[in-house]
Structure formats: C-alpha cells, structure tokens
Length: 132
Length: 206
Image (tube, rainbow over all chains, first blue to last red; front, side, top):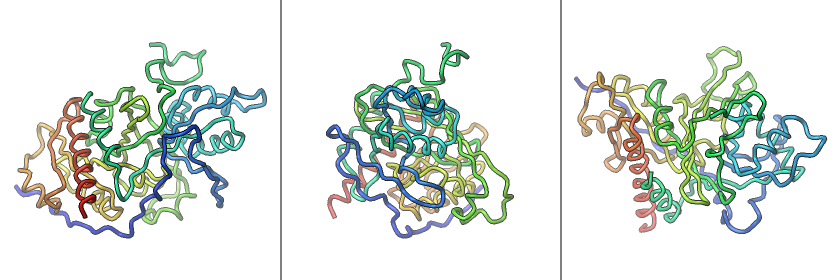
C-alpha cells in the first residue's frame, strides 16, 4: 500500500517578527506599544508574554482587573491568564492593555524566532529538555 | 488538591506558579489534525496539567481570514491546549497544541511567527490531513519536524517512503513516537531543537 502524495511549497515573503532588543536583561521590560485600529487599541501581547503585577489592585478596579492583578502576583503568561480566568485570549489582551496603561502590571516580552537563531538560546532549551 | 474550590479565586496551584526570576518565554507549536494526539503530547511533557485557552471567532474575523468564505457566519469557539516546561530559572518553554486549519491561526497573535519551530504530528491512517499544514508552514518559513504518532492499527510506512509521500527534503527529520510516553514526546522536541540548532549552525557558515 502506498501513502497519498503531497507537493512541497515554497516560502512566501518572510513574515518574521522584527528582531527584538536584547531581552531578559535589565529591569525594564521591552516597551509595549498600543496599536490603533478598528478593533480598538490593544497592546502587542503574545500568548507567552509574561505578565507580573506591579501594585495591588486599586479599590476601584473592576472584578476582572482585580482577578488579573491577583493572578499575576508572580509571572504568568497571557495564555495562562486566559485559561485560569476562562476568558478568550483577545479579551485578556484588552484587559491587560488597560492595566499596562495604568502601570499596574508589567510585561516581559517573549523571545521570538529570528532570521539568525540564537544558538545559546537553542542550547539552553535542549539542556532543559534533556533533564526531563 | 482543592484547586477548584468555590471560595477561592481561580489560579495556578502552588506548584504551578513560576518563579519570580522567570524573565522570558519561548514557544513551540504542535500542529496536526483532530484526534492525532496533540493534547496527549502536550500533557505528557508538561510540568503543569494542560490548560486551555479559548477564542471566539465571529463574523468580525471574516475580513482577516482568507479561507473563511463558505463557512457559516455564526460564532465558533476554538480551543487550544497548552503546557509548560521550565528550562532555567529565567527561561520558560510553552507548548501549544494547535488546530490544523489555518483559518484559526490568526486568532492568536503571532502563534507561528514567534514560535521557535513546529512539530507536525501525523497519523498514517489520515496522512493527507497534514498536507495543508505542512504547506502553510513552508509558505510562512516556519521550521518544522514531522512526528508520526504510532497508532497500533495504523499502516506503517518506511521513513523513506513517508519522505517521498510528504515531499520533504532530506534534512527535515521524520520520527516515530508514542505521544503517551513522556520520553518519546521529549525526544520529538529534542529532534526539533537539534534541527533548529543545525539550521542555526549552517546559517552561521553561509
């Protein structure tokens, strides 16, 4: 029996994310910008951007904001926040945009794939997996 | 284990928290058809019990999604299971099990663009289900390896035959695995990382 046959495709224009500034160093997280658009202003948050609270929730915080701030007493990814709060990813990014604007939380940007991959990063991940 | 107590806010169990030292995260995407074992693979290597992030796709998504066209315009909930592996005190790896249909991918910003790479999980009983996914990854320039989840009643093809059928170049690894086993899933991820590393090395030489 022979398997069905596929045909290879070629890359279109590379939609690689722009190389981020050196991350994971210094106290300042990468600046998050608010992007405009019909869908409303939204911070550029990745599923694996790590969010950490900077302050206790204000008394006037909404229940969602308060829950978010309490959840990220320690760092948690946007994906985890979405899962624990049982809210869609897009809604969490809207709530987090408010909290980022009010400087109630800070964001630690993810390391994304780059045209020239960081070998040290790849080796670190390999070592981590070997210990599993 | 009372992590879903009614009087407590939802959140991670104590052992599922990340250390405050966690500075940055990377992600790997596991992509494949329905029932191919994505969630099982995520669960077998994850240090936390797998979580689910959902997104609702409504008519608002139509303009963004080229392939939508013929579908109904009612809201669809798309779920994605994910897990986590702490690499160092500073670095965290997340694994996302992603639906194979590209029309869902835009729901999560940069799901593939930012990922280190992808694992295409295939079932030899329905090999053709994975064809489109591989093509999409090729078009997007996302490096991937192919992992064949070995179901007992699935046809077994020699790797060379699979490579021909999948029209994959020699350098793209094709491995067999049993995603229920942690070591096997871990080996798949290691295969992807070695492949990415070799790409990085060859890139450095040119």
